[in-house]
Length: 111
Image (cartoon, rainbow, N blue to C red; front, side, top):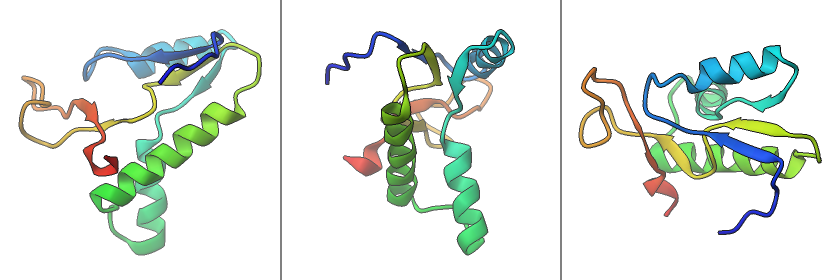
């Protein structure tokens, strides 16, 4: 997929690399920033049903939020905490850091 919006930037990196810290610093400088969507999707489902979303609903919810943020972006420079189609990985396995933190992986539930 080619995205022709040179004013949009995705901040990426491993767990604990400082993505959110960088985003907060950019916000403090007055830059337009978009938070990662995972927490919002989980919180909305917790309010609705009292449970965390199932994997597919989680991926679809994140994708919907991220696509809406992309389309809402105007001509100003905007920084995204991560990018479309990437979601928190499983608690164990190849996407887990040495510290046991969950990493990022392509959203298999949406495939």
